[in-house]
Length: 263
Image (tube, rainbow, N blue to C red; front, side, top):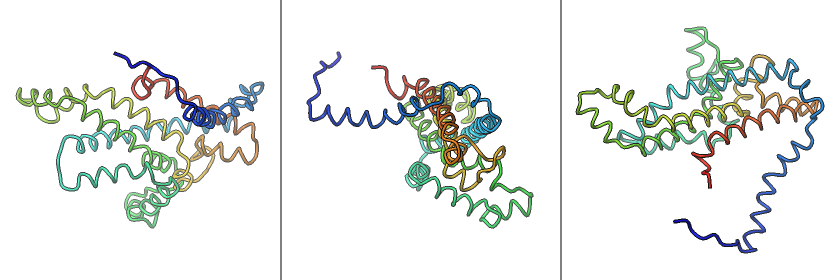
């Protein structure tokens, strides 16, 4: 039974409208100031296409990396008990509140040539991560993985564990039960988390520019291209921003039933 809807009091309606305007007006300004007449030509410029291709590639690779590590981590947090689990869960969420630039500095201290692991990677395997495309993927994965872990952990906690117990009584091992029972049950949560993770990776700026730099064709993703274009060509910055805005709207439209509700 739905609750009867009442009119909002004026004391709440006015600040609510002001808050909505504060969020919507910048987006409206972006649409109003967009160079619509030259938009097709600007979207096909080599620099724009290169930044877009690199962004799509690195965001997809970062999401794949997050899936490989994040889903097992979410299962560990949701299905097992071990000392320090609360601390681990807190550490997983740190990138959500950590300034991205600080994350980039932290990545440099670990994976730089003089970092905790970077020196060994360079000397032993000849692998250098900072200021490379691989560095972009690593930076994006660092800031985006918490979105996936939180989403998958929530899906695991909501899933009925009795199905896994029934599979175990029928002789299925833990890996078989996870692959054939648990994973299909939480598939919507994994998909939603992966989409949010991909969107966050696509929009990453601070950690990327700090750890990977801003080199066209190699590390210059769309957000970095927007930053550079803003200093030289406002219309180009607006066009690049429109692309990212369109992607964000599509992501929200695809996840509206899960995250925003339909009422």
